[in-house]
Amino acid sequence: MVPNCELLSLSAQRCIRAWSTVKTEHACPQLYTALHRRACSSVAPRITTHYTIHPREKDPRWEGVEMERFADEADVVIVGGGPAGLSAAIRLKQLANEHKKELRVCLVEKASQMGAHTLSGACLEPSAFNELIPDWKERGAPLHTPVTEDVFSILTEKHRIPVPMLPGLPMNNHGNYIVRLGNVVRWMGEQAEELGVEIYPGYAASEVLFHEDGSVKGIATNDVGIMWMIDEKRWRPGRVEHSVAWPLNRHTYGGSFLYHLNEGEPLVALGFVVGLDYSNPYLSPFREFQRWKHHPFVAPTLEGGHRIAYGARALNEGGFQSIPEVTFPGGLLIGCSPGFMNVPKIKGTHTAMKSGMLAAEAIFPKVTAEDLHSETAGLHVPEYSEMLKKSSIWKELHAVRNIRPSFHNYFGLYGGMVYTGIFYWILRGKEPWTLKHCGMDAHQLKPAKDCTPIDYPKPDGKISFDLLSSVALSGTNHEGDQPAHLTLRDDSVPVDRNLALFDGPEQRFCPAGVYEYVPLDTGDGMRLQINAQNCVHCKTCDIKDPSQNINWVVPEGGGGPAYNGL
Image (cartoon, rainbow, N blue to C red; front, side, top):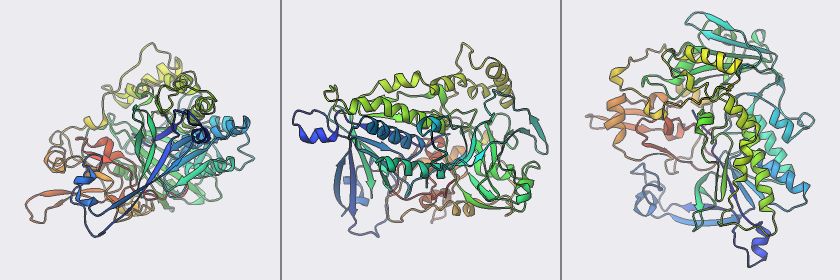
C-alpha cells in the first residue's frame, strides 16, 4: 500500500538576505514552472517512456515545442498540500509570527483545489490538532462526528464472528472523530492562508532541482473509497465498523471499514483495503470490494441507499521497519511517504501532521539564523531526524512494528491476530525482537499457471457496480493533449512478460480501468492499451507491477480526480 509524497525544500538563508548581501553562500529554494507551446497539437506520441528516461531532444513528442522557465524563490517550499504539508506550513508561520520574523512559505499542490485529491474514510485521532490549533472547535474545524460505537468482525462467507473491542487494542476508536478528510484539508488550507502561507493549487512538482554540490535547490513544476447516502432508518451516526477475513483468504492481508457520518444527511463512508503483497495475479481489489458489500452483515446498511462518490488510493504500510533517511541536504521527508502510518489502526493523519510540525520546529531556527554556516548550498537539518526519534510518532510506530509482518505465517490472518493479542495487547509491543517484511510487493505475485482464477459475481447495479461507472463518480479528468503520465520503461515488457507469465495483472489491480489488453489491428497478438484519462492517481500500478516497468509521473497540475470532501 502507499501515497502523498511531500518534500520540504529549504534554504540556509532567508531570501531577503540572499538579495541584500553579496557574501551569502546559500540560495533560496526555487520554484520553476514551464510553459510550452505546441507547433502541432495533433502529433500523437509514439513512445510511452518519460523524458527522464528518454531525453526530450530524442523524443518526437517534443518536436516544435518551445520551453520557457519562470523562477521564483521562497524561504521554504512545501510540496504536497495534505495534512503533513499544511501542518508544517502552519507551524512555520506560527513560529515566524511569534518571533516577529519575515518568512516566505510556499506550498504547491497538484490538485486543482485543496482537498480535491485527498481520499480517506478517515477516523481521525485529534491529538495533532489539539497541539497545532488548540481552538480548532471554535474555528469551525469540520470534525462533526465523534465515535460513539466500535464494531469489529471476522467475516465468513455467510456469517459474522464479533470480536470484543478491548481498551488498548489498535482498532479502539474511543475519543476519535469520523471525518471527510478532504473537507479537513480544505479547512487547514484556509487556516494556513490566514497566517500568510502562499498556497498554489494546480501545480504539480515534477522534478527536484539540485545545486552543483548535490544538495537540493528546489523543485520544478511540470509542463503546464466510496461514499453512500443510505436509508435514514439504517443510519447510526458515530458508529465505526471494521472487519477482516472474507472475502479474502487467510494469506491475503486486508479488511474493511464502514463509518457513519453525522453531517446533516444519512451518509456513510465505506471502503476495502487489500495488502499489495497478495500472490494471486487474478485478484482484483476493486471486485473484492464489490463482493464484500453483499455480505449479510453489510448489505442491509446499503439497501435502499445510493452511492454518491468513488475513489481509490494506495497506502504506505511499511511502518517502523521501512522508514528511510528523512533528511538530506536541501530537504526533509514528512507525512505518509516515509511510512508514518499506524497500520493496525489504519490511521496516519495524526502522525503525518505531527511530522510536519516537528519539521517546522527543526527548520525555523536555521532559516532565520543571522550567521548560519552550512556545508552545502541546500541546508541540511539532521535535527529533524533526532526530534522524530524522540517524538510520539516513533514510540507509537515502534510499539506496533511487528503486527503487520506477523501475518506472514502458515496461519496467515489468524496467526497474526494471535500474535497481536499476546505481544501487543498484553506486552504493548515491548518484545525484544523486530520482525521483517517479506520483500517488495511487486515480487510477491505467483505465475498465473500456479494460481486459480477468481470467479467474481456480476454487479447488481444496486449494491455492487462495474468499474467504469464507479470511476465516473471520481470526477477524474486529464487534458487530452498532455504527454502521458503513465509511462513504460520498455514497451515490450507488458506483453512479453506480464501477459505471458502473469496473465496481465495490470488490468485487475488498477482500480480505475486504466490498463487493458486488446487485440492488435493485425489480429495476430495483443497489446497493452493505457487509458490514462481514467487515472485516479493512486500509484498502485507503479507499486504492484511485477516487472517494475510502469513509471508513474505527475501529470499536468489540476488534472486527476476531483474528490468532493472524501
